[in-house]
Image: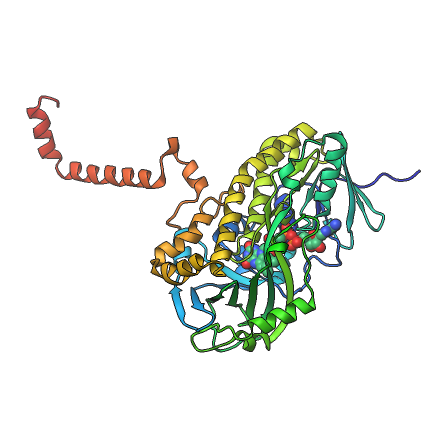
Length: 490
Ligand SMILES: Cc1cc2nc3c(=O)[nH]c(=O)nc-3n(C[C@H](O)[C@H](O)[C@H](O)COP(=O)(O)OP(=O)(O)OC[C@H]3O[C@@H](n4cnc5c(N)ncnc54)[C@H](O)[C@@H]3O)c2cc1C
């Protein structure tokens, strides 16, 4: 008799940032999970970098990985934005210390592979991570979900989380399952063409003395933008963004344009003369020092419906950002927290029980809560980040004017507000309680913890006023007693 497939509470499909962060969250709660990764490693070194912001770092801190991330990351001190044609500096803003003071964490850059390595290092039961398991088919049933991989393996679970990136197979399978039993489940807007307005070359170049640790360099020209950040080993994380022609800016989610070596060569030639620093460093100088590079389309979208039956997609599979501002991965971390919070609140202690029996109704409730919490914030963020890209690439004369002459008038505080506005509404894990870390701006969840919609500022002001009043009263208690006596109150 054939043995039945292994059954777990959760099968995570995809071992990128989303999959590994979710694995660590489930590990904390002692949930029986496995993670299936298509390739032979969850820590491939593909020469990409990633910047983390306080909203993502706060969650990673809850997971106990923050200290290790700091060891492989370079904190940002300042942003220097210039005119790529003339090399003139348009503005320099030391926003790093402002982020730290306001939000408790500073924006930091690292190799993506180093981040994945830290996350993987913290996975205690490595046998839960399966590589070379490319998922090709997923089924949702009343009692269970079944996952089939290309090598013939079969896994069963209470729920399947598609953390398999922008070209998600789980998303495709989720739609197929929905179409088979409820063709109205997936809203039409999710199947419409998505926008894909830009593409980018990203890579890592050897250190160059013209760029200092802690600097984020941006250089704009009409229709393009170049970026440089110095990593923890002084290496240069290098970016070249360009606007795609009108006819390429809309595509089906399953047919995102692919770019090859010819595109890369053409764009590197176009970028060569762009001046990155006031000292005259040109893109060509950096390109000649590139140790690794790749080219990719930059679609952006937010699905309105992330789940069907026992299946859900999160991370890039459900929401995709233009990477200029660097909130895509941070939002993946937030979505993991949102999902785990929702599962915890819907399933309670059943979340950790094994073997588990979770009803489709309970799962739907949890998954719907995730969409309710996440979609609105993500639509807003994705559009803001896209606007930042359009402005930075001076796509119209008005945008060029604003970026060149109006943006440099922003004070440091106003400049930092652009980032802070994306950070304070960040979603964290409901538990554990975040580590006490000094921060002057409250996160939205901290405001919610205050009674009856009182803001922290109101509360702190009220406490301050009461303390001051008490001190005055104490000092003047004798005169107060006299006044009260005269008024015949005391
Ligand atoms: C150039 C660039 C720069 C960026 N910079 C930043 C930044 O500074 N800050 C930031 O926050 N974000 C940044 N991002 C975005 C960030 O990298 C992504 O949001 C994040 O990595 C997405 O993680 P993910 O795990 O959801 O998807 P992915 O990283 O795509 O991982 C998906 C995983 O699933 C696996 N997989 C796929 N299909 C299957 C299958 N069928 N079966 C099993 N496994 C499968 C893949 O092999 C992969 O390991 C950037 C993106 C780009 C393109």
